[in-house]
Image (cartoon, rainbow, N blue to C red; front, side):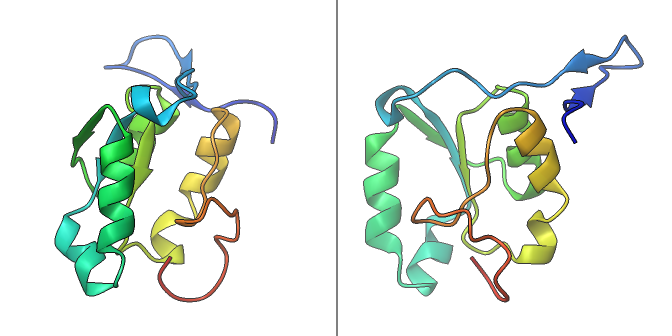
Length: 116
């Protein structure tokens, strides 16, 4: 660890990934899964509050949205249907890019069994 997260575009030279410098949700670009997932999990009001707090909301879905966070393209990603095994490989990428993976409360307790 500590060597950074890197990507190469179309075989070009490697470039270091870094999360965006956005620090305020009012300026943040949020990627999220379908709101119905939050409804089924009893979190619709929390999803609405988060989406309302952000500048823009779109859905890129799955692992790709977290790669976009690591690359600084989007600022926040939320996937209510993800499980630990869906996210485990993303933890070192996000960490090395200067980000972090948390649960919906902002806690880093990602390694608990079952859905986040």
